[in-house]
Image (cartoon, rainbow over all chains, first blue to last red; front, side):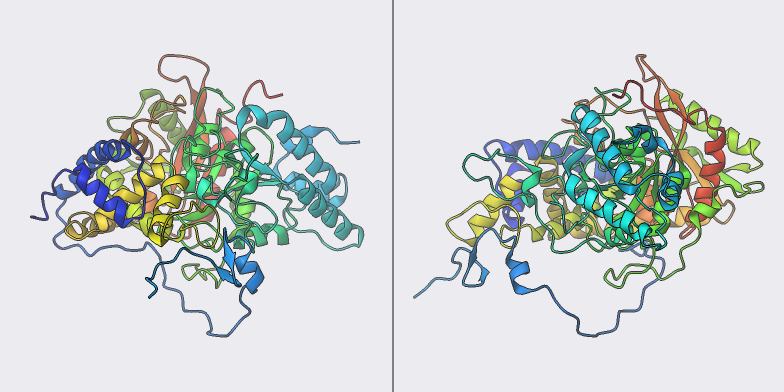
Length: 103
Length: 510
């Protein structure tokens, strides 16, 4: 696909992106998002008018790069405190559903 | 016995002095704030949670410190509202989102900010406020995860504008703005990614400062777009906002982008002579889409600056028209990455699923609201293979051009003056189904955000909305080169002394 004319977004694409972003969409939500995103993307497309051929990108508007802090060990979050807000805890750790096949 | 609640209408500096001298106690001031929140907030919705006991205990500690003969800090006994995106070790923190809220147990209401995430630490700015002897009575409502311009995206309830309860207070720091506008706290902290302090300040007739990117540590601020997010202050006057900013600004090693530059005397700059300062007016900001009454109010404020001895000259910011598009690519790309941390494992909501992936999908699907989902999708799209160059890389290049426009303009002027918003506060519901219209409400604040520049909103003459009705607040937007917050305070303060908005407060507050 030529990079200067992105295609309008389709519902299948929205569903694919939603899967990449780990977002479950409810009934009809993908279709509504497709319509809304299509409008926003149509607006954003005006960026194509700008001549940026000789321009470097700005990732950050920081005026000065700061030196890194000293690499000294310091106390970290106590174990119990780190687990305090976890929805499910098991054997002193964060519990998650299985994600490897056992065999 | 409580003291007269009107003590809360005193300026930040006056209030701190009264507490420092012992004329009023911090406990009395804090009780007055909690009483005001109880009386006024049910109609406004500015606070998600109120920490009355913790605030009284903190106030008592300030009074005890004074009784021991110790010097009190610059914000002694001053109640300050905190945007709920700021982590607090003694108060739930939701960032306006269901995803940072523990799942309801049987019999509990479906949505309750009191079930919010309990951070194990304070944000850097919260530590600074406590160290300055401020009192923190509550967490302010906001658009979910700081995404929105009307506060209607709060997962819990919307915030109403105290000038007209049918209108939006602006966003995303709408609760912080309303806490100050309605006299519930004399100052508040918010965060500004694309206008989230300045736009609600303009809509509520308060002063709001967004400092230079890196001026204030983001440690403990729940991230939206990390190359843009900054914490800043609200108050009823420039001096108050300046004092609070002075307390929270400065280097913090826990935020790698935090700047080491010395913090100027922002409050001391208030009252400084502004004669001879050069004010640039970009005609691109007075073009199509700007309400003529708002334009007239802002132009009249610029004339006021001329009357104070400033010189006024035109400047050009030719890439202004591309700022909204560039911002909504850059900010959504960053948010799609930042929000990956909300996965139902370590904190907040979890919705069970048959395997790990299904648990992520269900948790995020149920925990995020419509606007946040839309932005995650847009951000994922512009970063995805095949679109990265056309959208994300290109937007970053346009960001360079927007930044260069300002650099060129600041070669000939000291500050730039523009409107904050194209209209006065719009009716609740008006833009909620039209995301693009909502995004365009930030057209004048986004360019300074992309360039990382400090900016302030200070009230100018109120105007009636199109269609008539009582006059509503309007903001004058001043933008300065990096780290020139003191200059912004000087110019805004000078204008404030002659502004027709001076001393105006919302009518009919109980």
